Image (cartoon, rainbow, N blue to C red):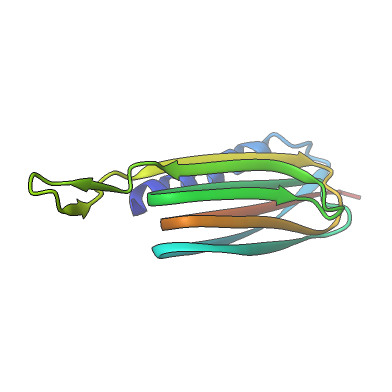
Length: 154
């Protein structure tokens, strides 16, 4: 699970480097990244929010979300600073428990993985919100923010 997580991060970095090298030599790129990891335990059911402050003049905002569930449902919604829903993403594991031959419940050994990456050009500045709603969820969620700004060389 950690290897897949590191691979996703490495691919994001490689992609970002390729974009940077392709830029006009008369400009400089400034990039800010942050990451938030959330664990859901014991059939978690609640609502959470993750807030990202987008600065004025940001040229590109990239939000990558990766959810892994062994039980339950996870709904992610991305809202811009005008409170307009920009994206909705759902991960659900519909097999929570299995029965053994004696009719007793046994732990689910299935993991469902869902990933999405959204890029927003010239995003509206202000507070963007990622709303997280869990229903009987057991698993992890990773949210990555990459904000880019280009500066012209004099």
